[in-house]
Image (tube, rainbow, N blue to C red; front, side, top):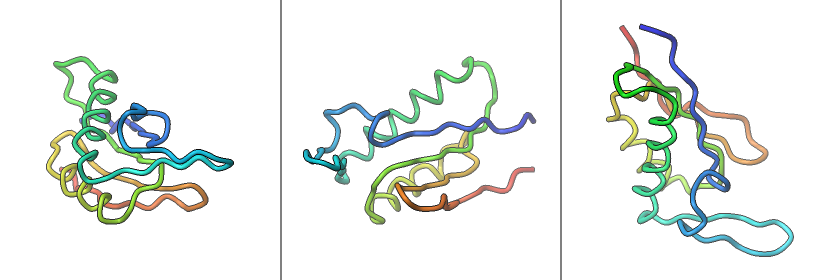
Amino acid sequence: MSEPKKVSLDLRYDVPQDIGFQTDGKTKKRFFESKDIPLILECLSEKMKAMHEPEEDIIFKVFIFGIMPGSLLAIMTYNLSFWDDVESLTYTYPGSMPEVIFSKIRD
């Protein structure tokens, strides 16, 4: 099996503006609710599909960057853990070090 491809999702710029809500002012911040998770996962799925041909068997390392409450990250983690083409999930937000949330063991 080939090496996993890295795919990143920036919650501020890669997710359409009509998902979640954004504060105005000097430091713009984007916030999400549980109802936004399926839409965010759809954005990630589209990005992954664009990175390979349908007949290719590709595994991805997913990197998510942005501000997200722990409860929403838990929902996303739960969902992504069932995706066969996702090997790992790493999350980071501005000013923090990336943290591996999960990593599947490959044969």
